[in-house]
Length: 240
Image 1 (spheres, rainbow, N blue to C red):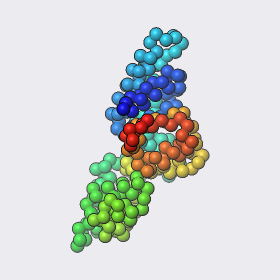
Image 2: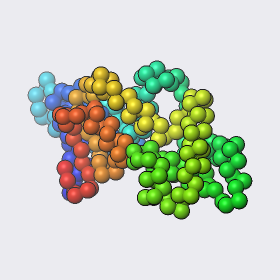
Image 3: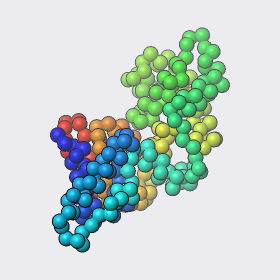
């Protein structure tokens, strides 16, 4: 139905109309998708301006000044700026999925959970449970009941494990991918900060909106509570 193409034309239209690129936030679910959309938007904008008034122009590299990328990459960039507000150093490190699983495994062994008579969930499963709980904005028990019922017998131990995991991360100024969203979400729970960050972007455009989780959706709604300047496309009902 041309949803992504519509979003690319929307970006081009904003640039042609003179909207400052720094005031546009484009959120996608892969870095490659963001890069492709920006290239397409630049091409459309330049083609649109051919033959028009010489007073109208778009710098060939205008989209490089835009805020664009995945929710996680944009969250990372914002948190570097607002780190002090959430008790972080701007130089915090980001764990990839493999490193996060290894850190959980270290805590798992430290707590003696790997030596249980009954086999405790593996590190990757523990990380999946933790990630689901954070992104779905639900309790650990609900996460286990809905998505990991075979691990429900370990509720108390998993609670202890996740608390230790968070303690180690905080102590070493480490954030995993889920934390990039979680801390961004914490930022925008303060109305003044939500308004400040939201005001930086006159336009927020989101591709594949059906893939947003509860945490990401709440961030978007906090930035643009009235929907003004928000444009999203997605596959839920093939809608624009």
